[in-house]
Length: 394
Ligand code: PLP
Picture 1 (cartoon, helix red, strand yellow):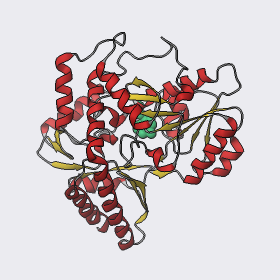
Picture 2 (cartoon, protein in one colour):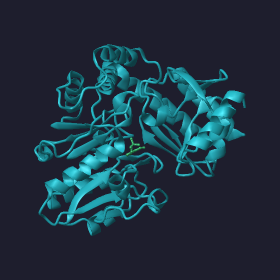
Picture 3 (tube, rainbow, N blue to C red):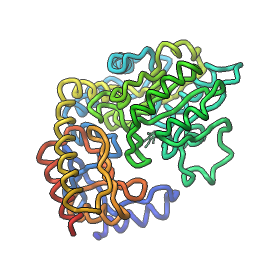
């Protein structure tokens, strides 16, 4: 380890709350799908800044969008109309077929906005119960945290919201047993990210829709990790025939800048009144300009690349599963949101991959999670497969 990194580690340890367990890597810059460290190492980033850097690093369209906007203004208050907000909102409405947008700064804030909207929508009724599922991750502010399933994230931070319930993911039977006239909203990730890249079943979604018809609760699709083209469709729910009442987005939607959105269908379009919800920074114009650039690039032909790379990766990973009998338990996911469930702890695999200049993530202890930039090339995919094969074969 060099002196610069050693010094930075010491400063971080003395100055920061201990919330992030960092890798001992100092990134100097990024280029395409690669991170370049301060000692000149070039790492293939198969994690894409946790699904944020959908166009990778130093993308010309993102840079151009930022440059053009910062010359105009980098912030004005939400008392003013802002062209970039309007441009991005109409692209989001176009891509989702929904009716209304509220911009926040992050995923957890988008979930909070959806909770508040639900509360007001059902105000004065018995519909108070918010449902989420085992292994769900919806964020870390107190409302969103109440819907996040894992005890380790929330056990020390109560009291949280009451009227919340976690049901087993993909259990149709438990849905039928637990959902009733008091259910206000269901929060669902069609592909759970932090929870281990778990894909919802069509049967489960079908039952959710049937129950919504009966009990008239709201369905909130959490597309914070799975949205913005990642599954080869703008939102993951499109793969399952679901039309949610609300969609929450963040991460890739700002192309690398902080931005979140709550998007709602006609059922909820008139719920918020002036002044009832807001955010000083929500819908920052530079972030919105980047978001518009991301959607332009996606719609100009990136979807085809996502599916080509996904199909190559899945084919090769399944071959690997067969060749290394017993080491890989499952390969799952859609598009460029893929999970490789190992038969053992994934942390040493992550470290060995980093040693081999490929950055992957492990979630839920033994699931190697791939969330690469959507611009991943055939050469990048091949490089990942070669290194992964080497590491797992060792
Ligand atoms: N929902 C999902 C599915 C997520 O993956 C995340 C973050 O990883 C969040 C919500 C929270 O988003 P943020 O970290 O932007 O608050």
